[in-house]
Length: 384
Image (cartoon, rainbow, N blue to C red):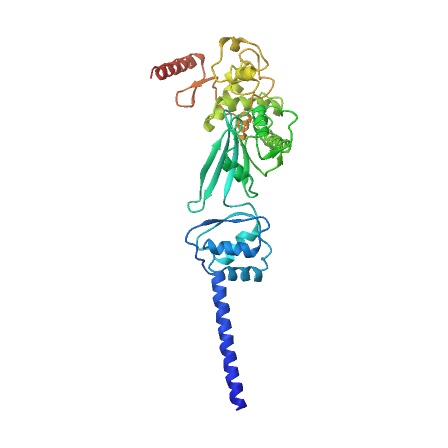
């Protein structure tokens, strides 16, 4: 009898062990196998969120098939207390194991909203975008001018979220005054700016910032990046350039930046001005005259007057010899490179060609013909 009881017990034990093994294998498959998500979604983890809350949210969104298995797997992997707050993109079919990795590895948010504070030459804009997880593309939610418009409610709401990604982008050719005025109006920055940085010393590029970042510290970073770019370009400059210092090269780069927005033209525009300096010719470039009128504080918004072309200022290159006394804007990396490695040409003149670019000439006679063609184009446009 006892032998029969023991035999039945052992049989039951084997069945239980097999069942446990099968259950464990099923749980492992559920945790590591493809998940139920039919299309990518954004998952937001709030600061200080508990694993239990996050797992229930994941189950409700259809990201995981079982909140319990998700918690058990995360705990077994030693990541139950390693959640990082933010908004994360979860791809379709992601396994629970993959989801745990995404939510605990940290790093910048890969989903949700992004606020881009664009400081442009003609306008400053705040652009709020949100990632569409299905297409992987950003959808614009709001766009406004912070210098003249109230902050929309939806932007204020996003600014209250700790995982909002924020960047400040400087367009090539903005002036230091424009940058400072724009940063003063940025609702996500703090601190005062005591003085406007020297013209040309801020690097036009994109800067990742956090809410509450100090304005002066951000300006210092912009100056540091521009200094590094200029130093590297100066070290790799062409031989025989008519500059006595990196600062003079920066002045030339700012002129090149304001004269053309076409990347392929920068080196050739730089060559025209370098050739003029070498021959002792006046640079005669309108953007320098405009800077003498505005001092970089805003956009002129009209054509130059003859009186302004004749008026002597430290920047009017129709009147003064050589380079103006300071840069006339903040040039980008490409304009700096062009100023220090100009094209090898004999060009001395250029004028607009009607397509957004310029036509170049080596002689005054050729240039006058090009100017006549440009005036014909202007007349035709005014007549239409």
